Amino acid sequence: MNILVTGGAGYIGSHTCLQLLRAGHEIVVVDNLINANEEAVRRVQKLAGKSFPFYQFDLCDGNRLDEVFTHHTFDGVIHFAGLKAVGESVSIPLRYYGNNLNSTITLCRVMARHNVKRLIFSSSATVYQPGSPMPVNEDAALGCTNPYGWTKFMCEQILRDIAAADPTWSVVLLRYFNPIGADESGLIGEDPSGIPNNLMPYITQTALGRLEKFSVFGDDYDTPDGTGVRDYIHVVDLAQGHMDALAYATQHTGSVAINLGTGVGYSVLDIVRAFEKVNDVKVPYQIAPRRPGDVATVYADPRKAKQLLNWQAEKNLEDMCRDSWRWQSMNPKGFAEA
Ligand code: NAD
Ligand code: UD1
Image (cartoon, rainbow, N blue to C red; front, side, top):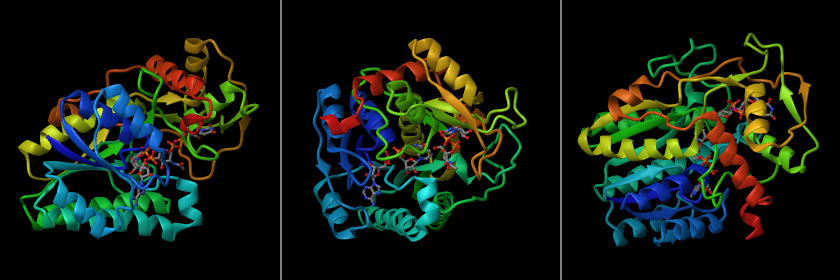
């Protein structure tokens, strides 16, 4: 298939591009590099042994996007582009609503104009109302606690409405849990700019010695060891989920929301111990107060992905810890070094 990948230079996008190319698809990437480095695109091309067109511009620019759709024929779009830092979204909400909603609306307008109506959207477990029963399934109540989450919630609603109004659309809303890990080559991986937001980059940067120690946010939760429990999923498994969603979208119309998680929860200390063991490195930590907004436990009910997509996560925690560390230790400064 010919696939447009928005945000394809980013963490999850770059891994998905690599798998698309390896599976024989043709891709075109649009990314404004607001949170990515063109080196990721070059490395995906190197790993796949195949080049593809890359356009650097803001997806909110409908004219530029229209030109891309005029030059290329697409069978579908995987839409990763978006801003994703929860804390930043609380401080500068307009930037988040502006970027994440406008880019999605502009994309859908241009798609409709060119009669491309197959879309895979990056949503998040963050759309589930805090306090939902675990494991959380796709029918759980929705509701968010921060502007980033609301942008995902609103984009989901917009896409459901588009698919309801025009039954020729096919929309798959993929709700990711906590992606970590990297391609086995160690050549592409997560490269957060500035201070990381998520757990694994803190762990790898501490293991590197760049941070003296990292803080475990709370050890008094109602969990087996008191630290927060999450559903960590290998980014390569996640990328495969997009391929399977694309195949599903060729056979079905309408809209559907699907969790991409493993169904297994690990605590912060489980991750630290597994990381230290599999990589034979020390990760000093201190117990710190709970992070505002955090909940004790989040993990997926992944059965719908198995039923509809025949997808399930294949990689385990050791794979995730080993591959995260290989990427970080081979690229201590991320893509900037190149
Ligand atoms: P990322 O920041 O690495 O990738 C997003 C990419 O989109 C970046 O390369 C960025 O430069 C690009 N981008 C942003 N706004 C753009 C715009 N207006 N025009 C063109 N390009 C733009 O993030 P990621 O971790 O790869 O996440 C991909 C998607 O998955 C995002 O939508 C994110 O919200 C969602 N998601 C991520 C996680 C996670 O933990 N990583 C979890 C759930 C959902
Ligand atoms: C975060 C986002 C959420 C997003 C999800 C997946 C917040 C508030 N939420 O959630 O919107 O969908 O990532 O990308 O940012 N932890 C530490 N020390 C650290 C960092 C994290 O102990 O330095 C703990 C957290 O308290 C949590 C776990 O590690 O228990 C995972 O944290 P994180 O990676 O930030 O993901 P989420 O909190 O699940």
